[in-house]
Amino acid sequence: MIIFDNHLHLRQDGRYLEAVKDFKRTGGTHFVLCQYPKGRQVIKEETYENVFQETVDMACEIQKHIDVTVFTTVGPYPVDYLRLKENFNRDKAITLMKEGMRIAAQFCNEGKSIGIGEIGRPHFPVDQETINDSNAILRYGMKQAKKANVPVILHTESTTPTQCEELVEMGRKIGLSADKIVKHFSPPLIKPDENFGLMPSVLASKKNIRKAIKKGTRFMMETDYIDDPKRPGAVLGPKTVPRRTHELLEKNLATKEDIAIIHQQNPEQTYDITLEE
Image (cartoon, rainbow, N blue to C red; front, side, top):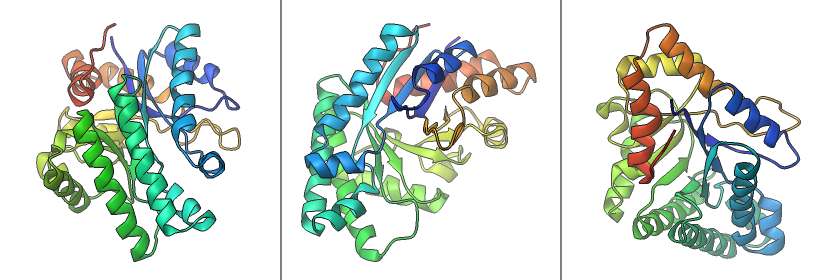
């Protein structure tokens, strides 16, 4: 049985391989390694290229040591805009972020990554200029994703149906279809009138997943594990998605067919990949 964690981060100074072993031991088979925010390194090097390559290299190293399949997504983390603006200036911050989008698309074209993300807007209150600039950078990223024929994985403020509609409309104007917009850290907005066609990547708390499965199977699960030694187990630990999946089956809240849709069909269609047991 395939069990797919759609969004987690790893650090070489964190639990790293031990965290992946936890994922595998509890039944995990595939996951998306999302590039860890490294604003300081980007400021120092004035490019995202090495940061992205480090993520790809980690995925290769993991697969050499542990029998799991690892995909990567890369992109300029939205909060980097604020750090870059503070260290340089507004124009250079926008330029570096857009260049990060272009490099991310290049990684996708080369088969190193399967999506551009996490990109979007800061998740905390910011001024209107930051919102406007973040949206402009996001639109540029969506254009790059459309050219590369890959999805965007979005990090934003708290997700609501209104926000989903806004993001889908933003993509529509660019020509990026709703099913190529993945909403990271999503609540259980599963129905079409809640998510407007984007793909929710639902944070795999017990409450969220039970609500989600009652509404349907068009969603993916994620932990958003951050592998931070100072915050062990945050946001959710690497064992969570496998355990939550087994709980659904054991409590007859989902069928094996439901699980196959969530963990195989949805990722395959979203990322245009093939998952094998």
